Image: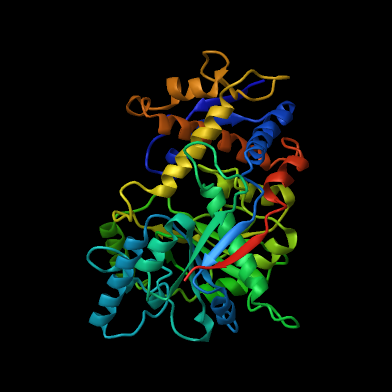
Length: 462
């Protein structure tokens, strides 16, 4: 068996559909049902055989008792997924403070007060404390979730900002992890950890005979600086309650992160046209259409009750596409506001020249890629992953197709990029197959989205 696909001629660019999708025109055939399932099964089995998952998830913060108590009477929290950007976040917060001094105000009027984006060098992120308008409707805590290897850096750099740092790591019983890897990381794993934190916090903050302080939580990529035409957190929270068992609310994602000067110019133009403050109206939403990414409101109660979460097997891409396609497959409702747009800023200030987390992710990406392109096929199933290019050249290993036909010449010699493209191709194939029940068995889907055996270990790390 082989996957019928073409190359993405634009792979390697800056846009979302150029960075994460090495293949194009993938043809799905129900005759290949076992093939698609084997791709997911193999990844999960590889993690299990290496004693990586399922394992307890350690969640560390300065004082768990304090943050649990602080949730009493609060609105849904803002939870940020981040890596290697605490200096940029801090600089953005300082820029917001300087802007408020000029304006002679204590805080911005709302998250949609675009005056916050008119600083000279950097934008404050949307989750900045001073961008949450005062009042009971916005009485909410802010958390930033990072891998444990970055916990101390974030805690030190963000001290006094009103943001609580949460460190995560899957605990290992094996004393020596596979070569060149330490903590298990990846795009799916980081989002899994963020959702698990929300589940744990909500459960812990619920009184024995009382109600949970909230059922929802906001998740943000760390470089989100605005939501265009946003009616406010409370308005969206009211909308999700109107749809029974609605799992999430998403918005139109940015196709790429923009330079600060472009964002500042956009903010000035919007303000000049009367759109510089919070929108008075909520636009129409589509039900179960669109991709939830970058910024979203999540129904933590529903995710807890159904025991579902992002899948950690998606290490390099498609952690969002796969989860949304899982919702479509299972007929789970979500809302999508195309009229509200996510604005992300290009980051130029990093904590480390060589990012630890990125290096670890590259190690695991190579580990998966090597396994998926080696060996001899049994019963026509992978490994190796085979591709049947639509432009001809006959069936060939995915790794050969990537090097010979997909990668631009300037990238072919970089083994990290080769492994990345291989991994993303497998993630692209499987995430697309998830939506249709005829393409992957329920047993396989449940293994990767309803993971059992992962308990949470709360740890105080002052």
